[in-house]
Length: 154
Image 1 (cartoon, rainbow, N blue to C red):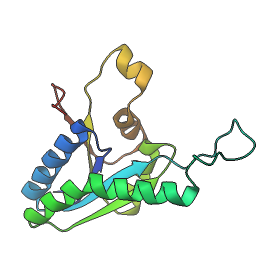
Image 2: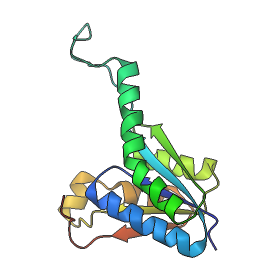
Image 3: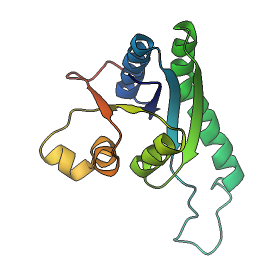
Image 4: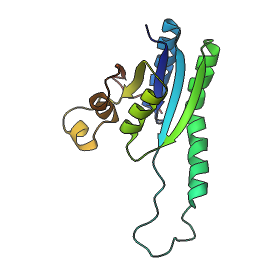
């Protein structure tokens, strides 16, 4: 049914558990896995005229985020490898993770977006916003939301 599944991760405990579930689902479908970590765009400090010496240079920030992306998508890659699935990973940069997720899913012809939800409701969801809800509202692709009832131990 699904040939290519986009599995998102932000490095949190919830997304790590979601990633494991995503790879298990992909294995059942015999689908290719594309892991995605979206990092925030680099920002210059707006409150000063010169960049402070302690503030990272753009190149340093990009290198650090690429390493973080490799670290966060690594478990997905290893699980997909172990399951015998075709797999790849992307670290992308965007101010809106939800829109980047939708863009990557379209660009790479993914049939399904597999992502987690922290399970917040009411005011918590309203105040914090939800990347998952934003993805749902910006794509026509199917989105499978893996929701954890309990927060995993860190």
